[in-house]
Image (tube, rainbow, N blue to C red):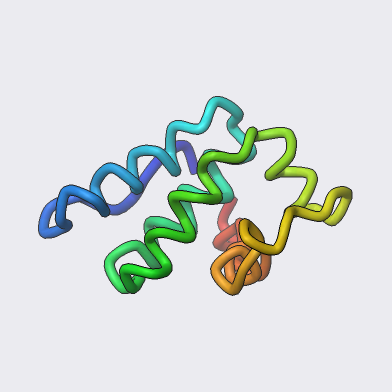
Length: 96
């Protein structure tokens, strides 16, 4: 997979912005992890979850990636329930 499979049509501006940011992180690994999650979940996230995602996106790619693979612990105000969902989200579709 090389990029988003989800159209931003029908999304409000905040969700469109977050979808773009998830797919344009700066490292391909984080693009794929966050982008795939956003493709699948962005339309259904609550306002609180969107805020949590915005907070996560403020973390650097190396720190966020290290936390996802378990090499680093993020502060509790950053690593909430949404972060746990992202960590558990399958990063391949079986065809990649």
